[in-house]
Image (cartoon, rainbow, N blue to C red; front, side, top):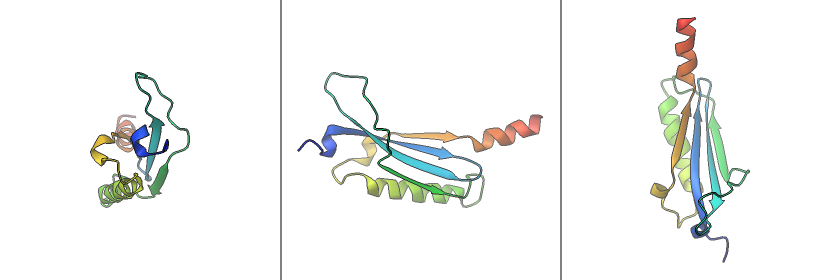
Length: 100
């Protein structure tokens, strides 16, 4: 069938902020010989935790989000084939305030 996970590439984005972290799982159709492809606008899965990464529990909650996202992948998808992009803005704002 056309909708098996073999027809799709997957990617994970983590937005780790000072007030919370959000995770998004996206997919895009794999097209032979086409380097540019269109990522589906709607996330396949997303979740958030309202504890920032500068909190003592922040990293554990990030781990929890990753586990949930991994579980949302189709069973025949190897998680090691899914790139994770981490955007962490929390520390930058804290750094900036020290220099102002």
